[in-house]
Length: 487
Image (cartoon, rainbow, N blue to C red; front, top):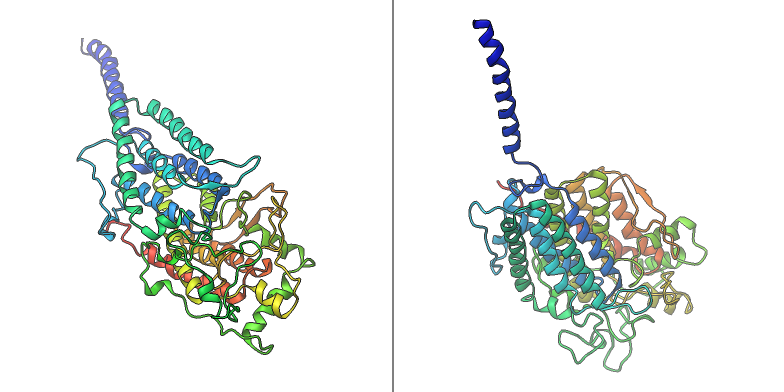
């Protein structure tokens, strides 16, 4: 009788145990559900918005070099503050900015993090590109098209995430959360008067507009003659220099004193002087007969031409997107990355442009044409218009590329390791310049090459590049000292 009972009850017990195990497995939070942490999702929402930013940034007139980092900073900050409640080892940095007022989640509120981040990016990217002008012509975006593709991406991702969440209340609250944080960040961004107003007049050539200075007052003497050593407009921008008040934009971790790098070499036209030697180096290295690799490096890192590539400050975002794919990083790492890179890029730009307009140093083109060869020009070319011998339209010292490069190398190494080997595929397949991918043993190697490429391109002295690298590195370390992690 006992054996018969065992034969009857044993299968029943096993069936109950199996059912219980299945129930427990089903009850556990799974990656992708609203109960999940940010780290349980993939990076795709950040990757998608980064790619769209790079596409629009390419055609945006006057968005380089200062408005792009400013936009990336506020979008990165908003993304971080949207997601940080679901990132247990991180904490909000809102208290670092006393005049920033952000909403808070109610206790126990469920958020689908990709939905919230999608809403944040859609809200802010539309705002930052709202008044932007675009490169005209076949194949280039118009302002209306830019706004349309922003809306299209947000809508497409909304549909995708709504089907994944399968809970309309959670979906709607997640979308509202992203919108609320983004709106608060935008309201704070517009109180940065110099940054916000300069976005409306980036070319600095309409002297009837506010926040524009007349470069003549700094570069010409009372009789109208050029002051030796001071910046003068070159052939690509005869009216004025871009972002003369870029050094007055809001910073996130950089004080007024920290915005100014050490002084440049003393200006001299004496052939025995250090300044003359630096100009001679540019004249010797940058020419039509330069070695293939020097030209490759110069053009690979340029990103100067609107309508051809994304802007120079956006390069680390393009590199980050490549790493997201190759490393399959999760959403938490992606959010951390865009926040730290974005805030850093803003401070790089502000510090660099503050120093540029304080020192107001002449470009190699002007110096070399005066002392060495009146027909000499840099090798920077606009393949779209055919214009040749271009020089960026603002003072030389320190180099913007070098500042962005030096600082970005520090941030990327912090995120992914000092000896991270990678191949930069940003311009793979380009035919109008040498965009063949280049491989590096570390971010430091890549970013140093980026900086020094400005010498062989013919647009900077070595002192510009050295000072920029140092300024960027110092600025990046201050960004990393913000209280990101829970102590």
